[in-house]
Image 1 (tube, helix red, strand yellow):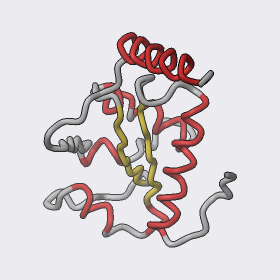
Image 2: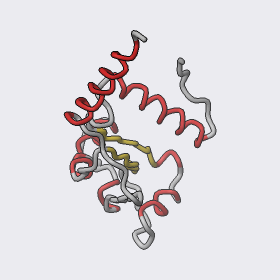
Image 3: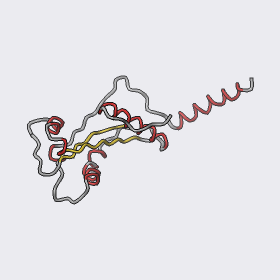
Image 4: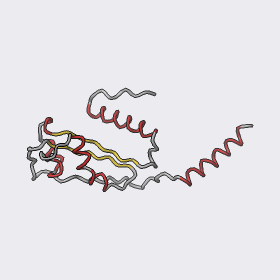
Length: 145
């Protein structure tokens, strides 16, 4: 058949591309690394006159830049200035005790080109937003086929 040469050529090209740009192989056991900021790192400094978004981008850089895995997600709470966190509790428990108006949650993701090469990042982001909306029990963004 006329498709046989294309099938052979396709397999050949597939091997060449995989060899030139290998994907991460699966580890025998999944590993999760949890790197929490200090209590003092999540309370907004009232002296800085930045928007919450700019403040978070600036102050979470050290945490974001320590990540060396090809795919990582971290959740970072920003606590309104003047709020005291319970220092005897783990960070996640101390923040959950606050009123929702006293904390804003940020979710950052870092993805290398081995997982996302630009256009494919949009699909991945839409999937993550949909999963977040499902977990939060709210309507998610409209996602096309």
